[in-house]
Image 1 (cartoon, rainbow over the protein chains, first blue to last red):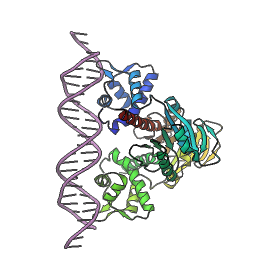
Image 2 (cartoon, rainbow over the protein chains, first blue to last red):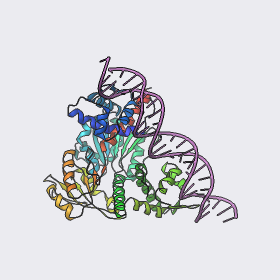
Image 3 (tube, rainbow over the protein chains, first blue to last red):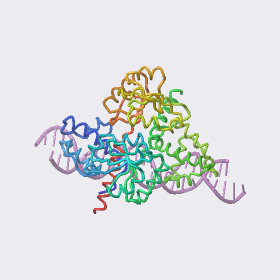
Image 4 (cartoon, protein in one colour):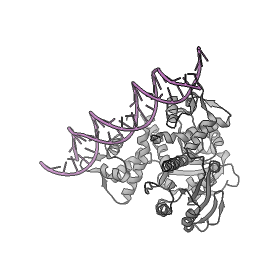
Length: 212
Length: 212
DNA sequence: TAGATTGTTAATCGATTAACAATC
DNA sequence: TAGATTGTTAATCGATTAACAATC
């Protein structure tokens, strides 16, 4: 398989979401043209994107919604269980723990960790909040695959490094910094404030235009 | 000013973050080469990006950190106050309300809204949680610029549409759907689950490789 | 079979990188 | 002035779109 570009990968979850909706509406088949109109992209792009992974469609017919949905799900690694814990049990950490859809998609959040004694012991939808000092033995004993970092950048870096030593290979990082570990460790960043700045850029751009 | 590409705009907040750190370290000047090594991009890209907005540097010297930081801040619309409210006062809404850095950057969160009677009346760092029914008069009376939508997609769409009628021109959307209003309404999406799927894609890609 | 629509190649477009003259 | 480094043009690379033969 050739190297798939980042742009293509970033579009897969969106395809997956639209296909899920079609599936729920009991729509059986869809052509790249119809899907392109729904999603506001070109049909050509859809066909090119999907063909990176092999032929999911059929000439003269289009794509079977359920089949394509399942295949994209597999590509996205949603066919298997993912054990995850959350470091930092503040609002953001708890928001993720409580987000029901993750469970349906094979994500198993088994614990949250925090240093705040007031939070420790509290039960959430993502399991109990435990003392941060327990996390290192916990991830080893429970084969944790993904660690979500929902805490400030200082401790995120420090705890992240220790977790890498414990064998963690994937981080979902919400801390306001670019974490970089050894090359076999995957880090996916979510920088909420940068998203908000993109919004204010566009507001400010619009205001400038209307002034002219 | 020519149309700036989305890719350039998306990089601005990251420049801003690195410059902020340099500034805090009392570093006065930096060349595109040095910055490129720090940020893991090419010096050429930095110069190209910045030159979309005019010459911020000086030949033979480089860039003044504080000046460049300020200018990018202005480009990002951070020079002015932004009045924001949050719809959906669950964990995610409260996480945003409590995120201190927003206040420092000119964001003024004045209220949260929810339909849950148990939450209404509660005080948070982003102001009081009010009844969702009050939001329409509130945004009109208080000149709210940005509405963060931290609630499920069904109500997000419905409430968003009503808010557009009340004059709201910018949404920071966390609901799991692509909201689309009239063309002068700005929507910036944060799809957390799509970010997580990108992570699992990469995990699954890595596992495939190691099998071969 | 005829019509529809994919899979795939070719053409275009845009973004990134390289190179260097301008200039501090 | 000489050295450094930008601003900017040109070259390259990659991604998107268009076109159409293959085929269901």
